[in-house]
Amino acid sequence: MQPISQEALRKAQAGDETAIAALIARLMPLIRKSARQNLAPGLDLEDAVQEGLIGLFEALRRYDADRGAPFVPFAAACIRHAQQDARRAATRKKHAPLNDSVPLPEDEAAPGPEELAIASETFDRVVQRIRTLLSPLERAALLASLDGRSAADTARAMGCTPKAVENALARARRKLRAAAP
Image (cartoon, rainbow, N blue to C red):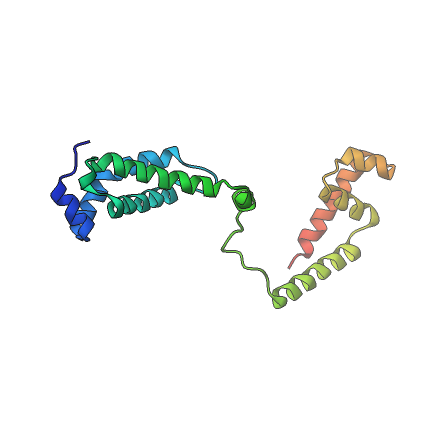
């Protein structure tokens, strides 16, 4: 990478937005490369890039041309250190619950009291419909099926043939579909 001119550097240090934008554009490949090397749970690429930009601004603030060191290596070290600090902070044990957790869907709001009451009434109606429409064998076959048990397991538990359980389950489904609103 070519060195940055002292004039452009002085303008950026003085707060010239055009000079700062040019400096950022020139060093962005370096910032992104370093960011990819510092990814961690809790620190994604865009966060690491932001930390690199903070490091670049810190380098601009602290750089002293009179010391004789070129700006680009100094800035690269500041960028890398800022990203490494962010990585260390993100991987601390106190952040483990946040890094290992599963985010909740944002579009699903918790149901309110009205929705819970309606759902409870609907559930009660379905249970009542099951009790009145289905025979004991059909109810048992349906519940066993909902629990994930096979027809053979259900038949052994009930003392009948698997075919009888399959037929009872088919009748239960047919009756419930016909009674559905």
